[in-house]
Length: 234
Image (cartoon, rainbow, N blue to C red):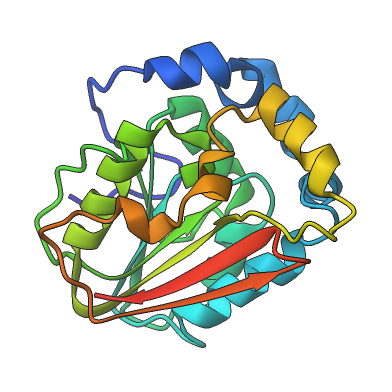
């Protein structure tokens, strides 16, 4: 089924409790979009690093993106628009999200004639066939999920990317004790991002499914260790 940009696939998926209870202010409430859909604000939230982190993630996916690309969850700012610019003729980009208003918001940001498929789907319970995609991107998603959902999201993403394909993950990481943001970030994350400190305590690879062996994982950190990027070859 071809879904044009701005059209949402009918799906009975419920809003997960962790979103409605913990992140209602950021994603679920309709006014959240009016507050957070500002490029300068998403850049400020990431201490001025949104652009460099975005570009590093897209470069890790590839200078061009043939075949099928999956973006797991909508993102405030211009990430998807920049990703779309990497597409080559005959390629496709699909973006999944569990929230219809986030998909609708993304559709408004994209060119009307863009062939992006927007699909309502829970990242922890994808119904796609295995090996459907050539690459997938998770950009600051995992820190917003409780552990059981995070593990399922990682497992599903690895499953739907074909052998030899690539998964890129960008998210928080435990910074150096010398990082001046170390203490402030503890307070910020405990208050606003209650699941994020999991990524300070453990490596993302700890949540990989035990029965799945990936070919390679390259991990880099930046900004005094506060952010990490994983480039995974499936």
